[in-house]
Amino acid sequence: AAMATEMSHEPLHVALDQGEEGQPVMLFVHGWPDNAGVWKHQIKHFKEKYRIVAVELPGHGSAPAGPEGLPDFDVLAERLAATIRKVSSRRPVVLVAHDWGAWISFMTEKRYPKLVSKLIDMDVGPGATEEASLFTKTFFGFYQIFNVVCYLLGSPLGDFLIRRFILFFFPTCPTPSAEVSAKMSYTYWHTWRSPPLNPIRAFFVGPYNAKWISEGYAPGEIPHCDTLFMYGTLGWRIFGPETWVDRLLARDGNRVKALPTNHWLMVENPELTNRYMQEFLEGKL
Image (cartoon, rainbow, N blue to C red):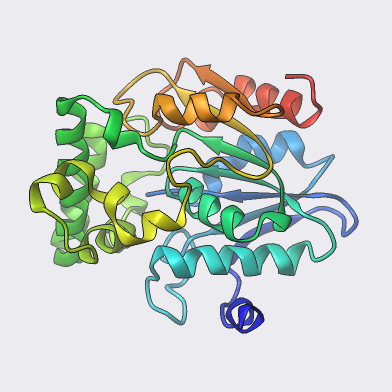
């Protein structure tokens, strides 16, 4: 049955596959509302030592929606696993992920730990909203619900609204607003549409109570592999909870680093991001 599940999903769209067949694979998974271009500094830095594979989530960049339309997280996790098996069938990969890409990577690593040798997680950790202040919870709920509304409105009004929203609330977003569309917010739609929750708690906690969240790391759980968590100390600070840091650091081999950036640390401070990544992979961090 497990094999049938594995074979039933096609790989994610591969925007870049660069390097030699025998090299270890470093696989990059972006988040909302980005594409593989956010990893350009890391790709340049690591391309000599690794075979670089950068995927794009359905509906982002040049990736089509896919056979399931705009899929939910369960399907995305399976498609990421299928991608890893395709590009690196003989050895596990170094998985580098940001934003929603990090959560999809959590789900994949939890289900198929043998596929991932090391995990580099950027600015998103499980349970963020449960520990946040009331102000942060309110913003978190507003920002996600706004994305859902834009998704439902579609083009052109939804596109117009989500682009203005990004320019105002996330000015450091590296993806040009003209490249962002309302359909990219399907991740938020899947977050909010399924759970029959208490509406007040759902507003403040949202995705961390949804059904698919239980497929990620539950309280007390951490990845099976060595993990580097890097987060920015500026801006909204709504995605990386302290308990995630504490849980990671309780295990030998894991590392946590704070950078003086907003959410997109790999673009805002690529030198420090690359240095921490390299030292972690070399066992020197």
